[in-house]
Length: 286
Image 1 (cartoon, one colour):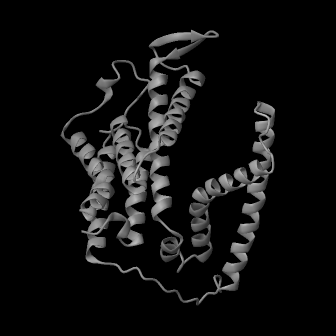
Image 2: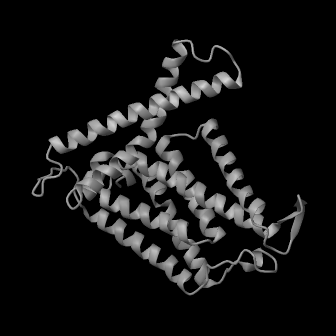
Image 3: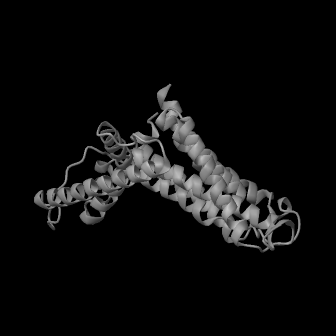
């Protein structure tokens, strides 16, 4: 069996987009938990591990997003406490947690997406009908890990020049500003060089030919069909209102969730959709 990352870029792109679209637009906590579960599994198998630093960042980001909503939104009937006369409600907290799970899961999916979808794969998908869009997408995905790498290089270079000698907040802020300024300058110069190189190689020519090693095989077709069928099952359940959840409606929160046959089929479909990358990678390595 082929690993998920070895499939045709079109099949990979479609699977990622269908998975992420559901997580973005269906505000159902079970769906979002499945999206987070699948993204973490595939992140772990792609990057081989999840560092403690990364895990702490995810937790802090989740807590920050979860607490923003109840602080600024005071709708809901179940009041937990008052802060400066403003009610912090349980319903607003649940909705904030829901947003935290959604943003975190989408972020992790895109982290894995940027790791798998290399520049040549992006050019293969978009290069024929929109070379500029292909260049823009490939540069955007490339700069996510590149910025982190360059920031570390600049930071180490500044340290050898005597930066951060004084261990205080002011020195750290000044050092951070210098590193950020150097990073922006370096990135802008690289962007100009990339654009010039793209134009010099005939990237904007109308009848420009292209070469690719990627082949569309039967298992790519199977992956696309399975992804579309599973996606359609979830969207159909959402269309009839089975997956809709009103976080601010009165009553027990868990009673708002649907566990009928259609809902369970939709949950199962999205679970399969979100773990397909992980399962195929594991089976391919055995």
